[in-house]
Length: 334
Length: 277
Ligand SMILES: Nc1ncnc2c1ncn2[C@@H]1O[C@H](COP(=O)(O)OP(=O)(O)O)[C@@H](O)[C@H]1O
Ligand SMILES: [Mg+2]
Image 1 (cartoon, each protein chain N blue to C red):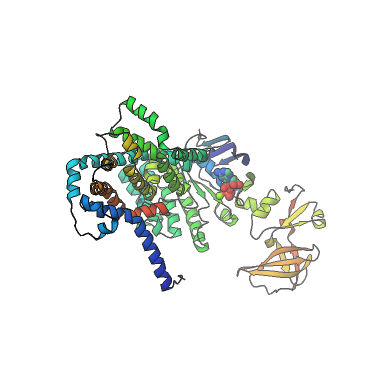
Image 2 (cartoon, rainbow over the protein chains, first blue to last red):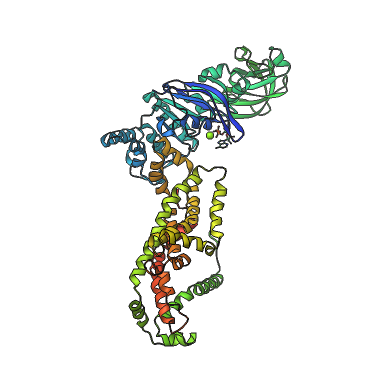
């Protein structure tokens, strides 16, 4: 079991309110991702759940019992840190066994779980090495191994992949998702990378300056962002925002349209523009187009092998079914 | 690319460093030379002493006959090791608290502790003497262990604090998440990681306590007198005592020199730091 409920939780450092009071309910077995720009309070929120920081106000309930003042060691949660935080003086074996040793688990059970974890994480050959002798990806696995042997009520991850190189990151992302499918244990995952959030989460919490902007499944956030912040943060490349007369013609202060919802044609379309810089990804090509009617830059997506070059004239047609409308305060108009 | 150094420059540097080293080591060397001379030779002009070829170990014999070296030696061991380990027991938790849970006044507390080292010890001699007399611990090892522990505590805490601060806080937090109590966190994670730092602290403090002469001389007379008192008993203003004083000094500093020699790598590493991680 691993249901975590936060009610009116806030955190003040000195006289800075990093987290204004917020409510959040994390269901048992859910893969919950906190995403937001750097410094928005994601780590602080995670550390409040872990018990590494004390809440300023509010309460944290884990599996029905109030854990607000329970020390981290007693909350039954496991955490994977960005720096891995392995014990440098212990072998991989001892690192992974440490939480079981602290729990005074019977020796044979410890061995059984250690071997199972090492197997799953491909660490069997490295059990007698020190963390200093491992690669980044292996260290990350040890940190995960140390977390899973306890069979915690929930896993907390604080940007666990940000110290890995891009290729490893994709691999580990899949491994963690795989682990979640297999264990069905609650996971709370912090990242500033919206791609990680979109690909891994059951549910995403978008944070901005300590405030929850929106909670929802990746597709909900993608399809109906509740405000311009979420609209701009979720999705890559970023949504295009258009203000002024064009927005007014849709009865909105701002309208948003994603690059993938604009049709590109060399013949005709709603808008005419000039191709600027283009980014070829193979499967897709993104063009930055200066649109004459709007006198602003839009990013559009075209297929992988479109033959357009810098300075070419291009015609764009927004798909109005996918147009997002926002009022002066940036809130969605439905 | 390594910086290339001209041979001539290297030679000059080596010469300067060698001379400085010799200058610093010379007093010790002189004591050793004098200790192997007869009392008559020892008071001659330095050059005469240096070039005379009569060597003798009679001073060592005389010193051993006149005073009990082993008793003083064992007192020194008990006092220096005892005060250091007692100090560690207090300093590890104190440094832990200041390094990992600093409060608003942690800096002030650290400065205050250091400031106690600025007070001349003689300023508190009388009160401490009277307290010791009333507690009946004058001339006792327990008393000296205690007072030297107190004297060196600020240094122990400062050194440990510096080492502990180098240990990433996330590792201790990981231990907490892994279910370790505060005691287990200190025993299983913090202390092993800080071993190089703790080892240098221990070594330095043993040396300081071994050489400490103010309190050991003033608070002991016979029973608990360590090697400092052993040397002092030969610094008599009358008579021919140069060679015997030198022999006593050599006997007193030899153990700590040997300890320092064998642990110099550890000491240097600890004092320059960067060893954890
Ligand atoms: N221990 C602390 N003391 C004071 N301010 C802190 C502390 N920890 C975090 N903060 C501040 O809280 C804000 C949020 O930090 P953090 O939760 O680490 O952000 P994120 O993980 O989203 O990048 C930052 O402005 C940071 O400076
Ligand atoms: Mg963070």
